[in-house]
Amino acid sequence: MESLILILYILLAITLVRTLLSILRSSKPSPRLPPGPVPLPVIGNLLKLGDKPHKSLAKLAKLYGPIMSLKLGRKIVVVVSSPALAREVLQKQDLAFSTRFIPNAIHTHGHNKYSVAWLPVADQWRSLRKALNANIFSGNRIDASKNLRRQKVQELIEHAGKCCREGVAVDIGTAAFKTSLNLLSNTVFSIDMADPTQDSVQQFRHLIWQIMLEAGKPNLVDYFPILDKIDPQGITRRLKSHFGDIIQLIGRLIDERLELRGLGMTRAESDVIDILLNIIEENGEINRNHIEHLCLDIFAAGTDTTSSSVEWAMAELLRTPETLEKAKAEIEQTIGKGKPIEEMDIPQLPYLQAIVKESMRLHPPVPLLLPRTVETDVEVYGYTVPQGAQVLVNVWAIGRDPSVWENPTSFMPERFLDLDVDVRGRDFELIPFGAGRRICPGLSLAIRVVPLMLGSLINSFDWKLDGGMKPEELDMDDKFGITVQKAQPLRVVPFLV
Image (tube, rainbow, N blue to C red; front, side, top):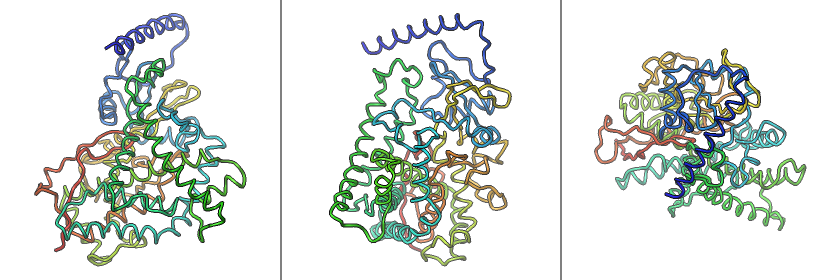
């Protein structure tokens, strides 16, 4: 109670200061902000966000338009919710909007100073982005690691096969997470980080989700900076602990590799950590802190987004059995029922690709792209985005815009069969990975892994919902963080016909 009273006194002081400042600035012309709801005193429109901001902001956009402004505490927030406005922000005026708005909690462990996701577009960011693109996500590197992906997907199918023989359900999200985690950990460290004999997968997935949850949660400190030392919601404290756990784990793996290198024991074929350590020794553009935080970004973003994409797509297929049958028929006719799917087969499976696109339209991995800010006033469609404003692109709302999509809330993969729309950032109706210079660097890997995992699961087994649940009873609600997960994990039983 005492802490609450203290917060109220602080907010009262803020109100008085704001009133004095508004009086002093009354002669200065105000910028023409985009329309938006009338703010309440002190807190502004904070109560409008709710626990699922992607949905509440989409509802507000229907009232105030595809570009709107809100007042969250002391911060002006501009929200973009249409393909045309997204193109303006992410492409036409990309440089002006390329700076990140860094949530207060991201400063913990200095993550904002070392993370490629949050650094400003400058020399450090370019060096890290170059290291990512050249050593992990380049076409040549991805092609060279296709056997690794084949192996990890086969292990996923073997796990499902074991569940099939035992008649138990597969937790699709956790199984896909394990596959994604081991795929990335082998690429970076040449090890499986998910031990199948222990409960490490669930623990690590929970840790990653807590990071996404805390980093994406609206934080009062971001809108009332004076509350920084108090951390009233405990977001910074919890995120500091979660970041610390992963950085400690990565640090141990780096120490082990440095010890081997010191003994002159090198691998026949360099993995990513060897390449990054070589970069440190050769030119010093990046240091160990950069590597630790780069790995944090890779494992946090790469595992959660991939596994949730597979889980959402499987859920939509099980909720629409006729769509699932079409997908199975396409794969059977093209490859053969039960046969392993290879990456080179994916271009020959247009309906499977359409399913992935449609699922990402309805359930984009990051519903509100990582926030941006502007360093000077910027004009957009006749409105002013003022200096220092937070800028959000609501990809979730764009994917469900009725002026863009027919029957926008229905799962209809057929819409993409004759529609030349891609997810690579050129078609702003569908930008689950963002666009422009800040586009997700893992896009090229994700568009190979997700259809490969999904296609392999549906071609190897038939599936039924756990507990005799009917398709129409499947809960499709979500829970919000930087990413969006199914509120209820998808548990399905594999069987052979």
